[in-house]
Amino acid sequence: MQPIEFRTEIKENVIQLPDYLKKMNLKNVRVIILSDDKSDASKKCLPEGFYRPLQTSSYRNIAKREEIYER
Image 1 (cartoon, rainbow, N blue to C red):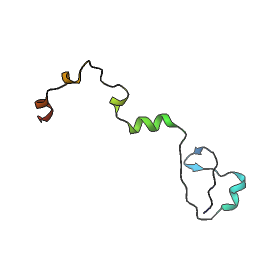
Image 2 (image 1 turned 90 degrees about the horizontal axis):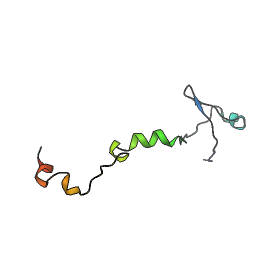
Image 3 (image 1 turned 180 degrees about the vertical axis):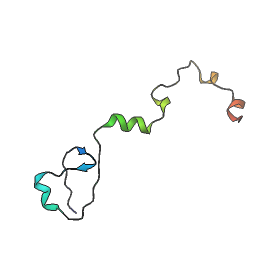
Image 4 (image 1 turned 90 degrees about the vertical axis):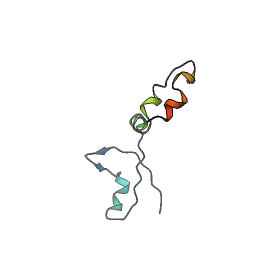
């Protein structure tokens, strides 16, 4: 396999090939999509608390050991 890289937009779920790749019509290819939009991807992967961490003078004030294990 030969790696080929190009930039394009996905419109209506269709990836447009550049003109120099049109000769690949009906060939089997492997497609890997890497998105440049990092803002949406990072918000989906990280928990909400990551963006607003708890601020406290001491973590001992959050909960006592017994409270942690109660359910």
